[in-house]
Image 1 (cartoon, rainbow, N blue to C red):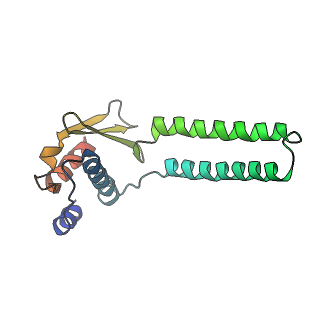
Image 2 (cartoon, helix red, strand yellow; image 1 turned 90 degrees about the horizontal axis):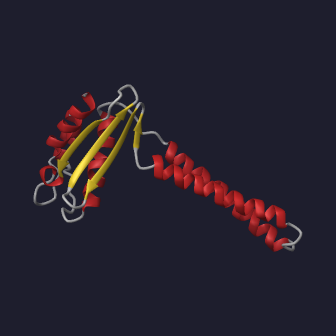
Image 3 (tube, rainbow, N blue to C red; image 1 turned 30 degrees about the vertical axis):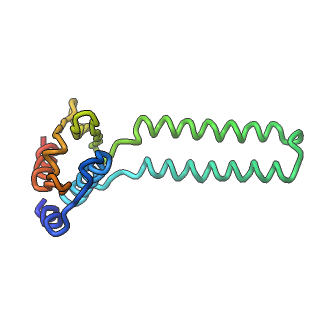
Length: 168
């Protein structure tokens, strides 16, 4: 934890206090770095791997469709083209559903971390679901308590809050 505090003392994180998305990105990055350095827990790459695999499969299907359409008449390969187009559609819809269901969370081993920021009152919320506990832990704080008026992250407070959250 002291490593992070020293790092952010040397290079403070600064965001635009009028853009909540940039503040959320900064806070999410601090959580990722906290989990990596303090808890020695790497973020799962399953979501990224699924996106990359889907992109490769979609490119292969598109390439096959283009090749078939350029080299022969549609009537000859109507059934193959139908299967390729339906497969492309189904694969991409399934990945979209998965991403909407699981893709916005950060997964670190048995812990799933979901973060949101409420635009109406600038509240940053972190919910930690641990597979070993029946109820999730929740952290809520106004971004105005986490950033000063210049947009500099008050990292000591946030890191201590996150430490307390993950030790519950």
